[in-house]
Image 1 (tube, rainbow, N blue to C red):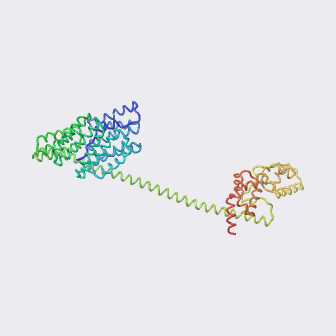
Image 2 (image 1 turned 90 degrees about the vertical axis):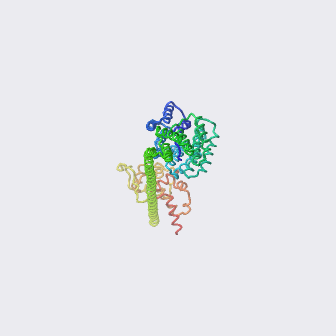
Image 3 (image 1 turned 60 degrees about the vertical axis):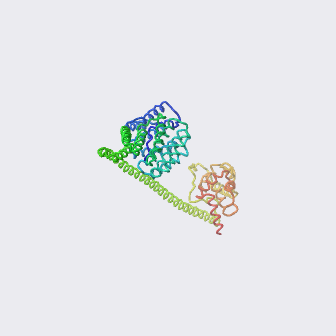
Length: 527
């Protein structure tokens, strides 16, 4: 017992699956899509599916195209290709968050694997279908998909030789279907389910129940406008043929079984053909028709060869999938390892960079402290406690030859400049070149000349150096200053801007105010 494909049913069912909008192009696409399921020639059905896929403009249209192709390959008994396309439908259904399609794809995958007697794989996909079914849209169509899933679950019990479990499950399936209002699809599904139950009754020699069940199945199928001649009609004739065989009505059995074979072959339905061939072989052995047996065995051998080829192809396909997954996983692992190594190198590099910066800060700090100590010992002028960076006047060359300044005047201005520095007038936030010139009782040109000649910088750098020199000495000699905020230190040495003070400090000292204070605190703790 294997699952019968639901080609025409899928056509009717998927016709009803909800779509967001129906433009003229959508309607044209859907008309061709639905028509493909009525196609008796499988090869033409495949061409239609390929054509539809090329014309697809939306994700839903692509899924529908793949459903046509997967169903056609299933009819051809090309399980490996059918499985490949149903897997694509499943993947796209997940990505597009379409649980109805995802459930259907996994139910069909379970059915395809069951045909090949790959029970574990079939269970795996029916479990996925069950999981996806928890998010079904709740539409009437989703109920039909759920009923299909219940039927497939029941058929798996036949594969496990659990006929009692099958009968219980298939009756539950039929009970569920009776809760759905009567219509073509419901009648079709119910009739199809009863066919399967009738076949099991025949195997269990419960012939009276089999006869009644086949009668009910035929009745429900006739009520439905869905005419799946290449499937249910052949299945019905098979069931009646086997029933007649059990009742030893051999002539009647032959008529039914040959009808089933004729319908299956006419529609290239290798699945039903294979089952009917097995039934006919049994019949020919019983009636000792060896000529008929020889003829039917030739057909059987060709079908068995196809099935063996399919199993080999499927095994190779599954191997390639697993190999691809393994390579993908290994690729991810290699990327992860590479990123981890880069991250480790970055962290190590960052650690050494940090250590190097700390070392530079420490060395620069010691240079500043050494200069401060030397300055105190030598009583040097209270300016230019900067690092090795030389702040020379920036492109402010003037023609000093035009200045008529006497030596006495020059010495006088230098002394006044020293007085200006000793009085710490540079701490005034509003200090400017004219105001300093006024303090020195001279003009701005003489002032600039004196600053450049005796301090080696322009006016702006001169003020900045004095201010930074002042705050550094205060920080060095007065521990309380080390607890002040940077913004307050900036105000104390004449800056209204926190950031300007920090930038000038770093530019002149090659160390930030916060690092300088941190080093002073560390030094104080050691002392």
